[in-house]
Image (cartoon, rainbow, N blue to C red):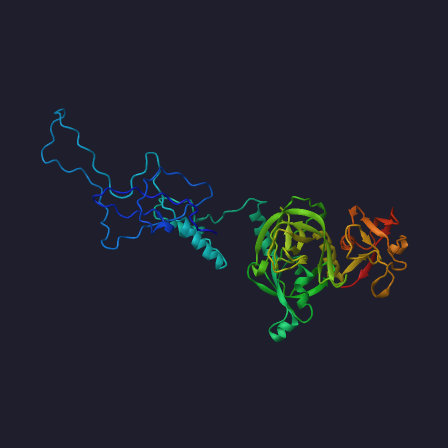
Amino acid sequence: MSTENEGNAVPSAPSAPSTPPAPPSSSVPAEDAHDAAPREPKPPHVPPLPGHTPAPAAPDPAPTEHPAPAPYPAQAPHPAPHPAPPAGAGWPTPPPPPPTWGAPLPPAGDPPRKRSGGGLVSAVLAAALLAGGIGGGIGYWAAERNDGSTSSTTVAAGEAPADFEREPGTIAAVANKALPSVVTIEAKSGASEREGGGEGGTGTGFVYDKEGHILTNNHVVASAAEGGTLSATFSNGKTYDAEVVGRAQGYDVAVLKLKNAPSGLAPLPLGNSDKVVVGDSTIAIGAPFGLSNTVTTGIISAKNRPVASGDGSGAGRNSYMSALQTDASINPGNSGGPLLDARGAVIGINSAIQSAGSGGLGQSQAGSIGLGFAIPINQAKSVADQLIKTGKPVYPVIGATVNMTEEGEGARIADQGEGGTPAVLPNGPAAKAGLKPGDVITKFGDRTIDSGPTLISEIWTHKPGDKVTLTYERGGKASTVDVTLGERKGD
């Protein structure tokens, strides 16, 4: 936040008559306080441009040899030494009394000049931001010290009506209703518990049901899943220990259960991510960089973004999603938090960001650049229900290994699977549909496929047993075939 003058300093007062001397001008810009050159007469007052706060005016330094004389008081007419002559006696009309010494009166019609405290307010505000927060009383503090002001439009927080409510559907109303159901998750690994170090971190989750289940990302809790500890803190400051019910690395979804869960939990309502359209409003809630209960807003920027995040060491260790893209500010710590629609229904779980220069997706320490990605809630709900039921995820599969590095032409079935296994699993869904190594899958249902990660992320939006029409190319010829998805139980 800049506190520079920017060429909009308040004009100086005109020089006073030689006798008596004028007091020092109070309107010299701070950066020009050393300049003793006489000032031009004050032009008529011109309001600043909308949105621009004039820079403060600093006083001239006092003379070093003699103190400046105190301003003359306003002079009343001198009493007449002789009785006033009768009217019409030919006496000239006495001149008006001299003006009060000091700053000249403004031109007719010009409102009284109000001393600006804009620079001081900016400096205080910047300092408060550096300290990590801004109290609700700063505006009031500044107004109290605006010496020339007789009125202010700033109202202290304590003067606001106690029963003031936001209209339903406003961002404030949606956030106020959702915040009590969002938690900040602290994860500590077993190593950090034993040695006072090791892995750990902060993420976000939200209340999934009244039994105390919390929905979040797998990568938020993975470090504490084996021998570590987890806690969930609500917006009212109350903290509860939690344990992992189940987690799915591939989907990047995990379910926790609060220990000694409080009564009266309010699960967030779930929306329908299939009905979301580009341009819909979004509200993200989370703990970016540990700043709990942070609310940001944006829109749905795109749908069905193929996002693969993880350590890149194989399909079992990466997460794949056909993500919702949003420009709502999402940063490390937002992971696992809800992405809400304008009604306050969850449409996604915030999971990944694109950071400038990172070359990849994930929870980089870089800040948000407006490219955030969320797991569609329809997919997350299916995974969460499975985890609550069995503790293990189930993945739909086509029974074929595809190349994960080629892009643009489709998803090519590899010549060989991992560890020398067949690329097309015998008697699997792909084999039953007649697919062979070298076939290039170009469409899956209505979705165009341009790479292996895109194909996997799209398959995982379905369930085992779903029948899907698949388009592929072999020897330059396109063909279509129906595939019934199989299943794989795993991590």
